[in-house]
Length: 234
Image (tube, rainbow, N blue to C red; front, side, top):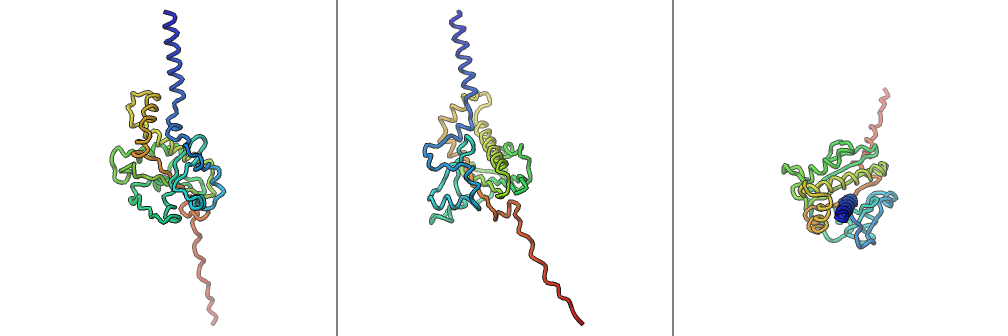
């Protein structure tokens, strides 16, 4: 009887350990096998306007962005037409694109509205999953792109915080596809088995834009100077 109790205790402890070790975000954004295409987010700050220099010079159609222990697939959608003879034709509808903006005052805009950082993940999940099938939200996640823009004077930590919030919202979206009765380990096992299918049907495509000439990020051009004052002399 003691042996059975000890075995049961061991299995329970192992089960608890598995629950703790199962990190769905790290599984979804695991390190890719081809580590030559990884760009650490800390290396982005030295560039001025976008990833155009990196993408065009290396001839890459995609990179992985490393943010701490997460590796995010980065598809330079808006740069492909600048350094490639192949014309990119989508997404055409605004509904296929989720837009997040951080200006130099570190104000976050989500879909054109000022939002609090703590609400970003839930807002992302609402628009990405679109359970109510609203036409202004994502209708087909498989064709969606997440556009993140920030002013070069914005806080680096705020940019990283936004990315992590988007990852959290995406992870919650994938978790919501499974029964709420499933354990964390069971969900991780299911995601691991169906990882390729999920990547096609529910991708996380990140498009980055930043720089000194990013007017939408708070760098509004100054108004033109007033016309010269003509003094009439009688």
